[in-house]
Image 1: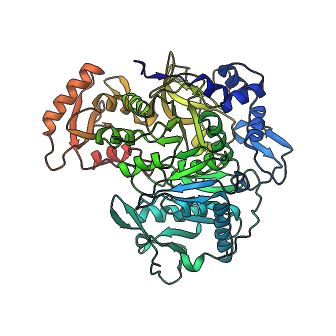
Image 2: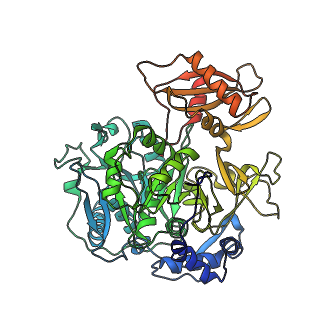
Image 3: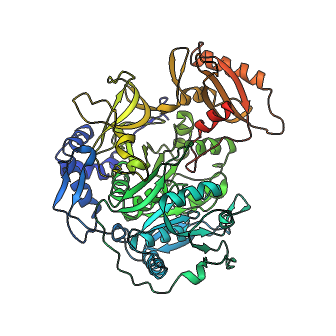
Length: 607
């Protein structure tokens, strides 16, 4: 491997890539020219994307893009009507739609035809329970075949799929059920994780909940409470169903942000959002018919729906592992399932590297990696790229309110570990400093419009959250607030986490990610998080490190650990950054998408 961890895709890969096909259509001969074309002629870019994805529409649109009310209120595919599930079953009917791991090691598969029929049975069953177009149906399920079929069945009804992470507490579940006004809940009886069984349906005992359909964890029908229904009594045999067409802005789903204080942000996904998912997968992840995609995720995180649309709309298949992805049961499943595109969360890669979970596993059949959810550790990513034979890593950063990414990689340029090499096609951005001036490091603002960008929130003012008080762009553009902190370097961009995770230490701005990067290899520490603690009496913020010991039964001395960490920060980052103290904890608080909840850690210092 090159010393700078830079990997080039092969010329044959480039010639056969979806991007090369798009370049021919656009009449350009370089990727940079392609991106300029995609943002200067956004309607043309999305027209070609729709054609290449072959999106099935009942009624074609008469206007591709209408910005007469301003770019913040852009209307796409005006006049069109479609049900996006019609574009999810166009692969050969006998081809594999999903391959799922099982406890006995032999993967379970379902064909495109079988998945289509199962989702139609679920659509019929929902209709029999009184679910109609626009009704919200919550899903609290592990990511498996039944969950994917249920999600698609809800969409076939024209109903709204509400993704709720199965890791949430009862109170967090109740808040999301109320915010979404769910009419029905599909919930698993129990979960199996790492050899342990956890109750799930039982969590709803002491909270408000609409009627529940309870899915069994094994072959036994679980007992259900009055007013609820067992899956075996819910699921009908009728697999004949005509999918309900929707308008472009009609909701198909509700997802919740990873906010850690106050009421969660409820983000509706419109009928347009799956197109953004599938286009990002086609062009930036170079997904082709017959590919097999895996990404440890759930329907409570945007990457769950993203994986469904990215795979099925590109006539590829999904590989699902219904258990923890940290040990060799997962890594060997990826090999056996023939995965060609593997998505990861950076902390998962660190766990594999530290535990030896890839020892003896052959992942050279993977042709592409991708990473999202948090800032990448370049050393970890370079290691993973080596494990798959030097294949490219597509860093992918965006958000639920984008239905995909705003900055990523293209295989037509060198892909360096932990670095981005392009904004996504059809979308542009600008980096501004605290004075609102264009800078090489600062906060990211998006330049709308794009298919996939949210246009409303539930119970909150969308314009206030994303547009109010935003500066204008360098050419007078209306900008949309996003909140990431990026640094532009000579050969790409590096992420520094959320802008609100940036701290001011002694008059110098630094991100949590930069500090954590320096301290990541402490020998007695499994994982850590850096936060700035505002002192109660005023004055400058203090740097506090929360650390999870490698050995919980024999933790290191906090004072000694602080001294070791301080030496590393002084030598490798800045001698002016002083660590006030180190707090030892059993585990870091994380969201459903595995992001560290630093706000919760900051709040704990005030208690």
